Every structure is written in structure tokens, then in C-alpha cells.
Image 1 (cartoon, helix red, strand yellow):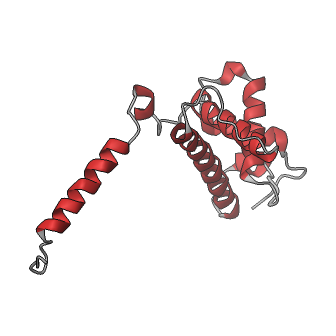
Image 2 (cartoon, one colour; image 1 turned 30 degrees about the horizontal axis):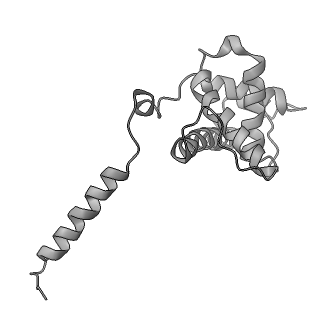
Amino acid sequence: MSESRIGRPSRGVRAAALLAATLLVAAAPPQSAEAADIFMTRTNADLLKYCRVTVEAFDAAKRGVNVVPDDIQGTWDLATAIGGCQGFIEGYRDAMDAATRSNTSVGLFNLVCVPETVNTFDMASAYVQWGRANPGDMDKSAAMGVYRAWRQAWPCSVIVSQ
């Protein structure tokens, strides 16, 4: 059995770590130009690409069908799409909630009243529905697209005042 000094792993531990790192690199999905831009969700076209896949996959799962949409290359791409959509949608809702509860609330957010019972799937579905109905807005801001979709789906009956 080899011993190691404190702070320095034994030769066997170093070899195991090197093997593990090699396997992780070998198992990583191939990087494409599109994969490099995964975190560049700025336009409606960017976000709609991920949210459409997310809504289709979750809708299929709710029906008991195990489906990966045709334009997704496998579970890695599906997970990336779901994460991109879910992260943007939930982050937007959190930001909207924080802004409407603060004393410096942005007036636009006071026109959207997403009920507490609405889940991420419903919010993404509303955005996808809006995106399909507004193809001319794909080069515009994803944040404004989400705002417009939610304003259409859940308008406030009374403007909230601070």
C-alpha cells in the first residue's frame, strides 16, 4: 500500500484522478458552433427554440409518450433546451416578482398578473403560443417577448399601485 504525505495524493490516487478526468472529457458531448452559443438567449428566436422543445417534450410526457423532438439530437440537447427555457422563464418570473414587490417597481410589470398557481410549463406554453402567433417578432428581445406573452395570457384586471 502506498502512503502519501499530507497535501499530496499517492501515485495510485493521482492515476485514478487522471483516468476519471480522461473519461469525463471523452464522455462530453461534441461541441458545435450552436452549442457554444447556448447561453446567448437574447432574442425571441433563441428562447423560442428552447421553449418549443421543452413544451413539446413535457406535453408528450404528460400523455405518457417518451419522445425527444426530431430537431433535438438526444438527451443532452433535450436537457440543454429544457434548462435554457426553464431557467429563463423562472428567472424572469422571479425578477418580475421582485420588481413588483419593491418600492422601485417597474410600471410594466404591474400590468401582468401571473397567478401563484401557474407553473413553469404553463408560462413556457404561453410564451410558445405567443411566439407562434408573432413570427415577425423573432429578432426582438426575448424578455419583451415573455412580457408580451404573459401580458396577453394573464392581464391584470386592476393596475397594482405601489
